[in-house]
Length: 213
Length: 402
Image (cartoon, rainbow over all chains, first blue to last red; front, top):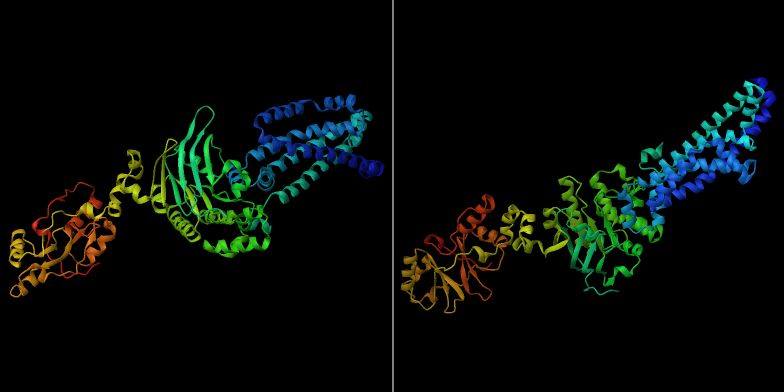
């Protein structure tokens, strides 16, 4: 363990950073696209079915194949990896946003509209806060997927902890494989925990007791 | 400013027909005046909620025009329109993630009132519903159902809306809580001079709250009337059924006029007759008092057997001993208002006059007993309303005008 860290410590840090960097950008883009899209889709029920079916289909494309497909379009390196992971992040966030928004009590939507909120005010002040736990669950799920799959991005030259794992596989060095895998797991768990904290903060209070916690 | 006399809401031949030809409401013509408390009542699917929700454009009519304060609502921005109309719904619809303060001042905030004005309004309103000011920092989940709907009601008043729409607001509450909220709403409505459009399927609620009841069935207005008029003259069998026979009977004391139960052909005499004739008449009809009317049947007074005995020697004509201070009731007076007075004075009968003070009949205690009997036991008891029997006209006593 000590030997491994002494030998690969610096590399490990750089690769972990790359992994995090690729994942974060993919996930960030995924949130930026999927949440508004999910909200818009609740207003267009017919389109919603088509779009969600399409996103589900994209999800079934094998991850390695998707990464490979990006090469003719974006070459090799981080850009095609980010695009591919972004596509993967879409579905859970999109679906949860859609479901979360749909599940907001019709009574509240009716009250918001009836009192004179504009559609945007109703979404921002009522529906999104109410749907926040479900949306955050989708984001957390996407985050774990994206961090795990970012390992494969090493195949198309995007770097990351996959570099260590694939080197280990090629050189028959289990230490490298484990040394690359454990940080991925830790990273995924840590991000999930952090997002869990964020979820708590974003979920609106509904009583003073919760507020006191 | 708009004209105060102008109706606050007017439906002009309004229809709502869904695609596929489902008729929600049809040919709705209704005028709601300022200060009215209008109850829309009917069974489910009668179109009462649809009718209400078209006012604030939660539903769009497919035909006809609705005027709010004289202006076609179709020409107005629906968002701005809704902020001018209070809205209370059955499931309260308080925002669970907002404190009561934020809930109450939701519309004022949308209207961009300054914070100080919003705070003052919230404090004023929460006092009106008898909840402590400290509740303003609480969340709806920390309140009972009744308390929540109190907040729901004042939320609809927070931006000084003149018109409040209420869609079965108390349907989910237990009877005691419901009653206290009904009283609260009636009180607020009267005190603040608001106009309320209230959807309910509870006839007791409608009779208690409304100044005007609109009965709906299958998308049509069947009858529009005051609660009293509705009980007195239900327009159709459906309305009768909706009110319920029991209520109609119970309500009879409330709506029956004195004229309806009086005995006709009372024993009367003209002032010019001699005392001899008077005593003869008393003997024939076995009564101890006589009402005195002039030739045109105007009620003048009465004579009784005591004064007749005392003054028989000195006097000759009925007019000499006639007492003119007399308690009587008008035939159009409601029995409800007269019963107490008749019973409290211990009178055995009271003369009934028409608008011109002509004698029409008498109301006896026994007729009142029949009335009470009917109310309690139903309509089976027989009436004898046409003839005044001998026991019907004793002792009037020296009563004054009531």
